[in-house]
Image 1 (tube, rainbow, N blue to C red):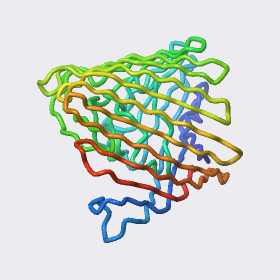
Image 2 (spheres, rainbow, N blue to C red):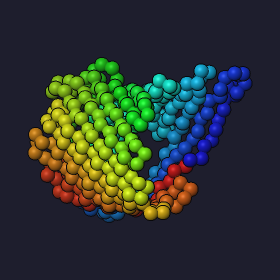
Image 3 (cartoon, one colour):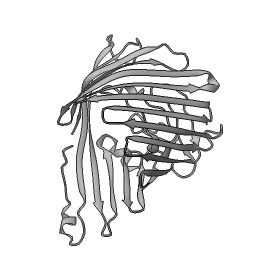
Image 4 (cartoon, rainbow, N blue to C red):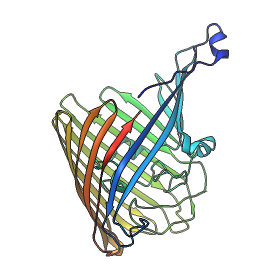
Length: 332
């Protein structure tokens, strides 16, 4: 990332006060995407389409006289949401830990995370499980997509090899929706308080073990939603594996079970990745399943050639379909 550092005249001119920095970064991509469905939402009569985008982001940072660090990040396309706390985030950190607020993940997701994905577009994040308390803008459109009304807050504290997390959604009853990325599920209306806890432990041998609990009360008058999630990851620089398991009961959806696993192999500038993800709504006796294989080659300078192909069996016994992509992605 190439940073453009901007020090404000007023701060520079004020003796004894540290200047704040603003850096500009970005990402972009270009290539071809494939979807073998006739109603894939791609315009025209071809299953192969060109796909490109560019996004610019702004990071700000500073330090108080007594050594506290503060800052924030927002993308230009989400600037309106950032002004209202629905997109981007701000933070303050010190010896007490780090407190972030805005469109931030819940504690369980912050601790456990996701398995590796594929493709230059991410292929609709088919590798990911769905968290209740997640950064709310899953698809980047500036709107809330989960049971986690914003602004939300995340506190994290590191003690040796362990990091602890505590998260909370906007205080009081709010309006929220829930969706499974890449799948269609009903939306909900008013939701009560959301909260989460999590922890992550790592050692010097590349092993990480994490876990968390998350809940949202009074979901549209249908009851509470909660789940717990566990994850484990190991890497030695060449090989890497990660697994995530979630079990819970979501109001309106009943018993929910999700799990995902991925494997990575890296040699020089090349990384090959495979993943498998399954989401099971047990009360509805319906399951979605995705698996895929991809590769990426680091071109240097922030550019990566990447592609992948994945098979998807959607919820509600929908027809199985295949998606893929091939292109170049950039980080500036």
